[in-house]
Image (tube, rainbow, N blue to C red; front, top):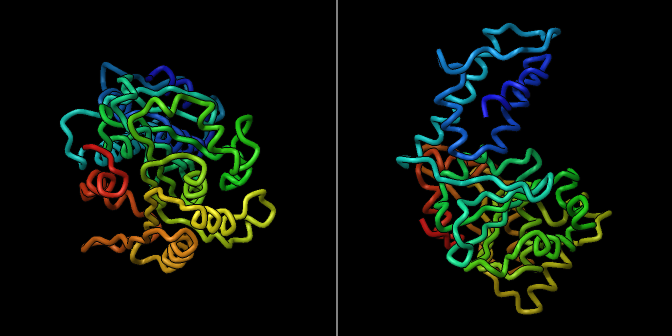
Length: 304
């Protein structure tokens, strides 16, 4: 991990590129890898300054400080969850834009959680923080990033030509029938798409966080029409448990939640905490208050 970090950092010429590296790692590494970096990155006698780009515009000290600030902040997030050990997820890249996080245990005893992040490839927080809120012995997490940057309207490169084919594409990636349960979560730009995928797969529970409007103009040139798909699903006796969650202080998300819940006849849930104004990002504030595990248990049926 340190060798890879040094190699990637050595390609950067600006601090902005270093920051982008940290964001990318935050979307990729497991809780155990985050702890390893925290314990070893620039520790005396363990990790030395790597060979940096000859034309870089930052100093060694600026780089080292940014690296430690990044990993220290991530470690604060993990410690806040108050688990003794990092959840033992390993990482399996199924495609360039699809990753399965699993501890390797038998799928027959687990829930498969299918996740669609937002436009920044995040589930409203770094992936190690998200995973630390989940019991690796009970749940595998499939992360499908929107490499097309089309809010999933264009499907997934080489796997699905449109969002209408995404369910079949997921089935082709791994044996989802081998799992005890199947659940889905989408956030931000991935929130409405996970509701559409729910009409294609037999999810036991679906959670949409901070969804956009099904009437947004971005869907006009898409092969999918969310209002038509959701209305048809409702008419056909759609019986998945779907929760549309929105921040108590986000009027736009509240409107979108009402629009989706009306089309699909499902539950809209306002998310609030006493000491913070929750707007678009629902999940990270819950994590920092040790409420996210219970939130996932209540709305997705995940076992802690």
